[in-house]
Length: 199
Image 1: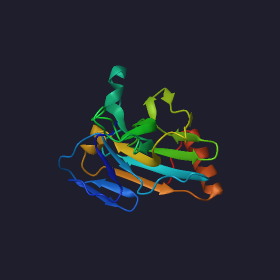
Image 2 (image 1 turned 90 degrees about the horizontal axis):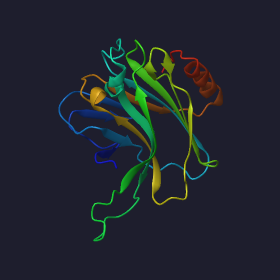
Image 3 (image 1 turned 180 degrees about the vertical axis):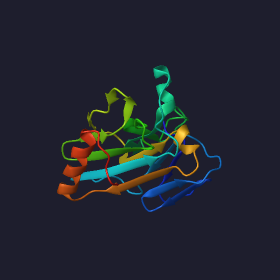
Image 4 (image 1 turned 90 degrees about the vertical axis):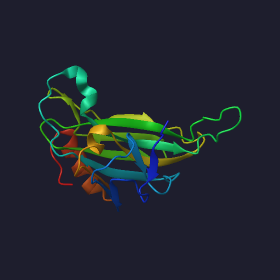
């Protein structure tokens, strides 16, 4: 369930949302914090997004593999809003839930992590590419997930900030749509080879 969900045009203490960017100024607000698009995803066609999470000071050496959760900066995926309305029989039924989610671990020796989100409504699939690294020897492999477009509720794009990113002043979450096929192909080529991308 998503307990703390706000639209991209909604304010939150210590958070500034301008266009497709979120800037953490400081202050206390609940985490994890998921931010969604203001309109649901289309029922046909394709939506491709580039997401970047920048966290100052992240990307250092990792001493303990079992502390992998500490290096999670956020998540990207699709949320389903209006899944179930609370009722007398289920007063705590969640109205918002993740349909698909992929965690983004900070890059090895880099202060940002970048992901490409490719949603194809026609085929009902979501593909996520990223330069996220679980360790110096393990790179992120593109993940393809089937999405049930007939399930109750509407699908929205969502990006989530986890505690490390949300608690670090000057962290930035940026999202932009890509409509040009050549630009998207160039981006995927860089990311899948573990290279940096000029956001």
